[in-house]
View 1 (cartoon, rainbow, N blue to C red):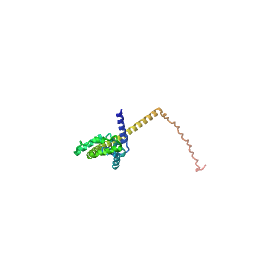
View 2 (cartoon, one colour):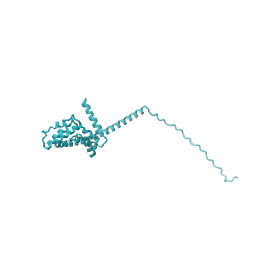
View 3 (cartoon, rainbow, N blue to C red):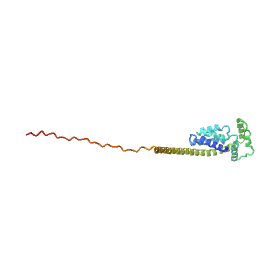
View 4 (cartoon, rainbow, N blue to C red):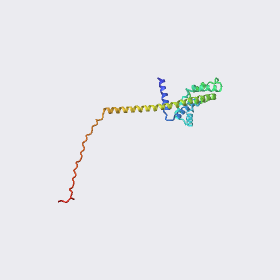
Length: 219
């Protein structure tokens, strides 16, 4: 099923490209949060450069942050930025009915990369302040939520890996002990024999002889 394949791809990406990265939880979470924040800003065409620059400034992980800017592309411009524009208009108290935002940003989707960027720039000039205000607010909120979620996920994932390794080591130790016990049962040691002792012989003693007394005169 296509949705299962997509779900597996997303899971594998998150596990091996985010949770499994060899870095501190703070740097990983901050890198992803910066990538999400930049994704929700109207900077299409410059988002990868901005993500790397911000990750460098804040000492975050650049590898995990850059792929998330691919969420913003010609197919996702409207669902991402139009709500930001509406929020910005609401916050600034402006009117947004006089300008066809969707038509402006989707009018040249079949053009080249440079033409799409130029069309996007021309469209944002008409809605600069509402779009930027709404995008910054939404980007900051999503970035904060992302940081907390990824930080917690990295810690839990590493705790899971540690627990899994400990269980694996215990199972291996039990299997080794069981193999040793079977080996001992199949090859018992010979019964211990009591060594024979020879009786000790006492050396014969020669009786002492008393020499004759020569001091008495003979008669």
